[in-house]
Length: 377
Image 1 (cartoon, helix red, strand yellow):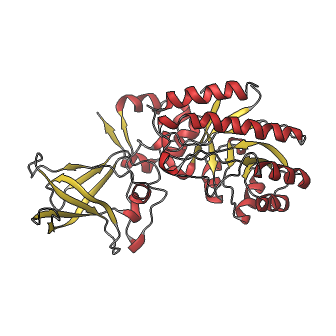
Image 2 (tube, helix red, strand yellow):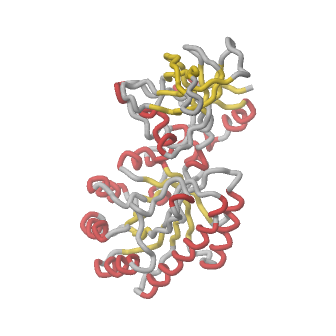
Image 3 (cartoon, rainbow, N blue to C red):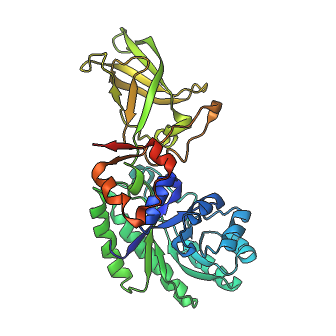
């Protein structure tokens, strides 16, 4: 997508190495709070490379954005416009429209909370912004997370919706110059199909090269960046009854040192927990048994997988969950005062050789990072 500049969604994974790497690569950043603003500006990122995309801004965070010069902010309500008139009248405002798929077509629906209808509410809000003397510079949308290839066409129709809002803005005397197509990109393997649809829509509805187009990918960059190693801290064998045959069979409960309140919250809620790999030399790996995986807290609902067939494991064995880079670190809590997992950087020798002498990447790894680092051979 040659005209689309990525603004990474910091909420997805805010580990310092991730942020420093993406900043070094020249990405912009999608921010939602004062704390995220500080994290990014402290890296030396210029305010014009950010967008304050939270449509419900905490007032003192909004004031802080004005103080540090974050100019581009998103709104989707009259309340936010009145708030902006009071707190940050000189900002560049972006109206967020909604273009949701049906809930069965997508994993996370955004339109119930965010965005306005492009043909009804959007014109009303733009008229209000004009009356308030606020500068609106563009349109944003986010069709949701977990969009399958069968629904790639939703990007086309959403961009078409945005063009109508651009046209209405022009009728009010606005000259919009920014289109934000949001996130929802999850896999590098799916991106070519999405890119084909998006490029076609951009060429059709926004051929003017002076229109700046950005996206807010998160999972696309970090979903596969982390694997989670969990330890079996306890196990229990119980008898389950087959309701059909009336016969009992053994079921193995494994309690791990991480769970819903740690790294698994988003994956459990969106039903995308994967079956882990078991690192064990003691057992026969071919036979599999009825099993369940539980978190370590005192909450009986701290359940990771209710039923899964796994080889028999032991107390002390390790389970590896792959592709746990998105919405794990940022959504984890320390309920029961349990510690959050440590992060250990891993890099292959060839990549390290390429990066270590490149001035763009000289500040990515701190001494503490290097003390924890592993070099993959």
